Image 1 (tube, rainbow, N blue to C red):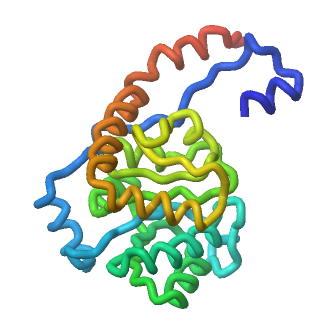
Image 2: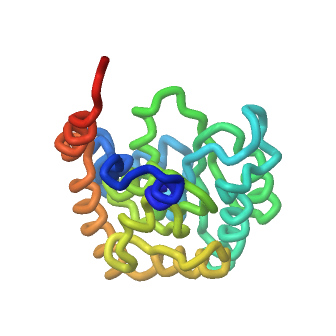
Length: 233
C-alpha cells in the first residue's frame, strides 16, 4: 500500500506505517485443559487437528455460494483437500458470513467442519484457542487481522504473501509464509506447521513476542506522531 501511494504521488513525508494491531487483553494463549473444554463445547473431537479460517469470503451477505476470489476461498478449499490426504483427522473451524462456497467445497471433499456466526467480536478469541493452525489463503489483503490475532493466541500460522503478513512473518521463526498462492505449497506448509513439534514451539513463542510488539497499547506513539502533522481548521 505504501508503494502504491508513493507511485500515486503522495510525498514520503506524509506517510506513516501502522500495522493493524491486536488487543492482547482478549487474544492470548490458553492451557491444554482449557483448549479441550472449548473443543468439547464446540462439538469438535479432542483428537482432531483443527485448522481455522475466520473471515467473509463469499459475494454479498447471503449464503456466499459465489466466491469472493481475492479472499482465496478456492485456494483454501483446495489446500484443505490436499491436507486431508496427509492429515486424516483434519477438522476445519469457520466463522464469518457468506461461507457457502467453502462449506460446499469441504463437504464435497469429505472434510468435517464447524461453522459459527458470532454475535460479538469478543467471542472470537475462544475460537482461536480451539485451533492447531490458522491459514490465511487470500490473494489480496490490507491486513489481515488474523495474522496478529493468531500469533497473540499462540496458534501457529501459515499465510500467503499478502498485506502485513509479508512484513510481520519471519518464515520458520514466527510463522510460515508461502512464495505464492499454490494449494500444493500451502498444504505442504500446513503439514509442516502441524507435524514439526520443534517448529511449532518456535512459532508459538516467537509469534507471541511479535504480537506483543504490535498491541494497540504499543502503537500509541505511532498514532500521536500521525496526528501531530494534521492541521484542524
